[in-house]
Length: 168
Image (cartoon, rainbow, N blue to C red; front, side):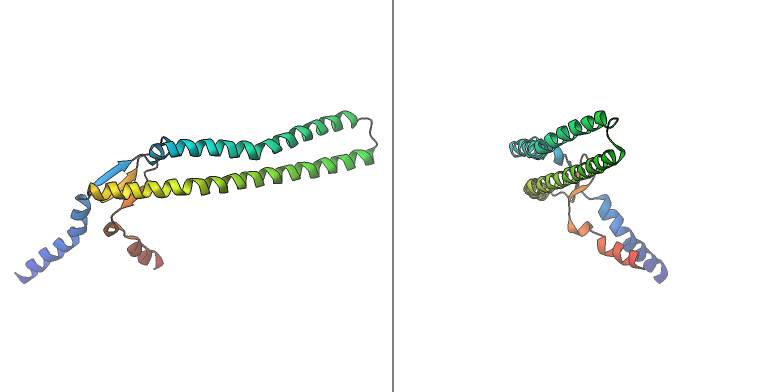
């Protein structure tokens, strides 16, 4: 009899997390839609477009100038001496590499700007999701587009348990 009771208690303890998970209230939200269809999101999109154009304008001018210089060099290559042609090729190669570096730098600058500008909106979204989850008594909120978690009740966080298993 004691073994049967002990077995039932053990089964009950083992099933408790599964029952709790089965009773979890889940919400789904479209974070992208919430952010980018808001007035702040639309303003952000305009600012990003302006910054992209601002960073791209000088590069476009340099690319056009380089393309013209390259075309001119190709036309003149047939009449140039071997040594002069090699020097011109090296010069153009250096200019092309410099242009690529400038493009990479502009992309990096834009990515940093974009991240900096989006951060407050993501923080605001996180606060709104937490508020709604609390009001609606939701345990987990999933993002509709990415299936990533926007909010979950800390009691469902198994990070430490997974970390201890992973470390073994």
